[in-house]
Image (tube, rainbow, N blue to C red; front, side):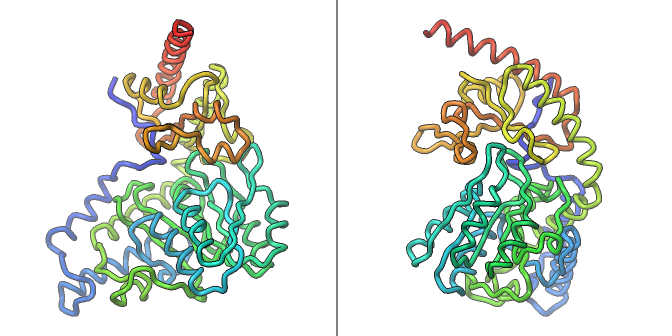
Length: 381
C-alpha cells in the first residue's frame, strides 16, 4: 500500500491546475507589477485577476483583499495594525485560537491592553454567555476563528459579530481552515476582518490574504512602499498570488462536492474510533467535514503518530513540542480535557486524494498499533 496522507489541515498538495496557472509567471511573465511598461502591466493584470478570484470565493469586493505571506502574517497585521489605531482597552479572543492570534494579542499587554480569553464548552464551542460578560467592559477588538485547525469545530461567528458590533468592538475571524471546506461569506459573517491562506486549499505556500472592511483603518507593519493599498510594502509574489486565485476559484466551484466526499469518510472514521475506545474531541458540535481529532486513553499521541507513520499513514499529533518536551494541546485543555488524555491527541484531516478504502485500512492499522502499544506498556509495567 502506498502511504496515505491524512494531514490536509497542515497543508495540501499543490493542485496541478494551480501549478499550470502559476508557471507562466515564473518564466514568460516575470515583470514587476509596479512597473509601467508592458511586462509590468501584464503582471498587474494577473494580480488584479487573482484578487477578484479570492474576493469572489468569499463574497467580498476585490478592493477589500490585501495579499500577505499567509495566515500568520495576516493575523499579526490585523491585531497589531488595529491596536495601533485604537486607544488601549480590552481585546477578547477565544481560548482555542491559533498561536498567531493569541501571541500578538498577549504582546499587546505591554502597550496597556487587557486580554480576555473567551471560554469554550467541552465540545469546543464558544461560551456566548462569557462573550456577553466580556463585552460588559469596553472592548476594542474581538477575534474568533471560524473553524478550529485541531478539532474542526465551527464557531457561530455571525452571532459573535452581532454581539461584538453591538458593543462597539471590531470583529476579526481567522478563516484559514474554513476556506474550501465550508461556505465562507465575508458579508454574511458581518466581520470587519478575515484572514485566509492559500496552502490549505491546494494552493502554494507563502501567500494569503487579509480581507478588510473598507472603513477599517489599520497601521501597516511592513513599510517602504505603497503596495497592497499601502498595507504591505514589497514587490508582490505574482506567481503565488496567481496560484492563490486559481486555488480559490477551484475551491469555490468544488465546495459541495468536497463536503459530499469527505463527510461520509469522517463519519465512518468517527464510528470506528469510538468502537476502538477512542474519545473523539468536538463530538456533538458542528465540525468541518474532513476533520477528526481523537485520543485513546493510555496511549501517547506522539508515539501513536510515529507508529502510524511506519504503518503508512501521515497524521498529526495534538502535542506542541518545545525544548524536546511534548505538551498537551492548549485547545483541548481549554475544552476541559484532562491533561493525560490531551497528550494522546491525534488529528486526521482528509482531502481530495483520500477514499473510504484508506479509512478502513487506517482503522485496521490503528487497531493493530493500539494493541502493540498496550502490550508494550503492560510488559514495561
